[in-house]
Length: 173
Image (cartoon, rainbow, N blue to C red; front, side, top):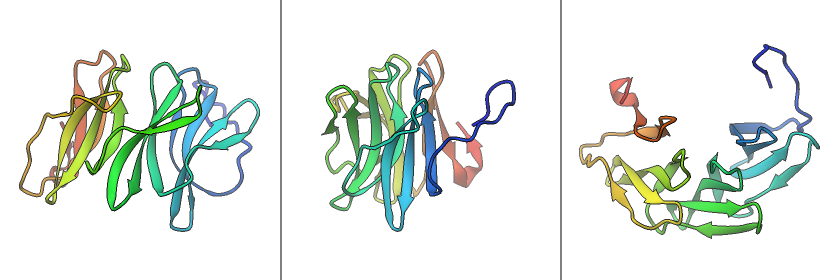
């Protein structure tokens, strides 16, 4: 990794295919996807000890994001032909499915840790949704039904705005 002084330090991770690394709020852990063949799993890598911990055991899992307190990781998982969102609690080491058959992906936890922005795929279009951290109170901020594809919601630091990518229109909104 590279610090702000432009000094590079290699992490002692085995040679594998990795994706979507997310540094924990305290800077001590890395949530990362490990790709092995057709399978993807979410791991937590302890930077100090070099020890990886596998969080997921079934399905294809991706897009891990930390809650602001650093105690939970939200991620997307393909199961039963649907993408859904799950949350892993580092304290209890338990996984909870927080959406059901929603086709939800690309989670982004709000800066206050109370909401998750996500992208939902339905009928060939994707839309921006919000839910509470526990999966309740699902609502949608967009209502595309024309094949529009959006990706990668991201919160502003103050939590007042959400940004997302419109690749077909080659812009961010």
